[in-house]
Length: 245
Image (cartoon, helix red, strand yellow):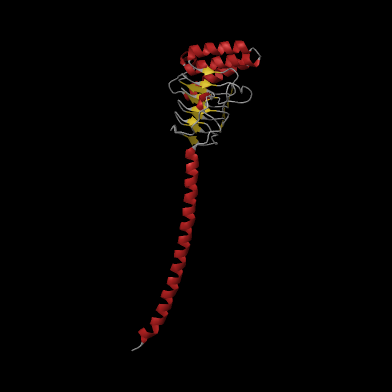
């Protein structure tokens, strides 16, 4: 069986297995927008591999217009990839996605380097068995480890360890800059998070308190030992007098 056709059937079977609203291959083929986006990617990626870059981009653009899913033909995507609902998914050129990855609508795998830095890896690597919730933004050349889960609407700009779940979207001021330089997605990898610094300071202070408390507990234990010895001596002194007639 042709490998391309086999891949198409495998993608269909993945949708049937993971989407309870889809009853079979024909329904997936005709009615799944996520599958349509993946299908356009598979075809355009083959053209990209053959060196037909412009044709690949044109086919990818057509897929984007028809499905609302934008996957650059240069991205590398493994088997059993599933996009649920599809609309608004963006996957950049240097993104790498492993096997059995599930992604929901509105997810972005974006690059964070400027237009002046086109060479090199700019987009995330998503390892096997990862689930990325709706609206999540995974940005930069980071790695989401195997079996990890990214919660809906989370913004991820640092590596995610294997077998962990990450959530959170709260935005706060990280720096004040007068620079007008363009930064894709507004994220600069060198920007320090003041909350992280503050939390580290709190952790250090708490560790100091824990050490002090441990010292106090040791002192109290010593006092308790001395008190027990004193009570024992007092009991020994009072014992003969209690026996007198």
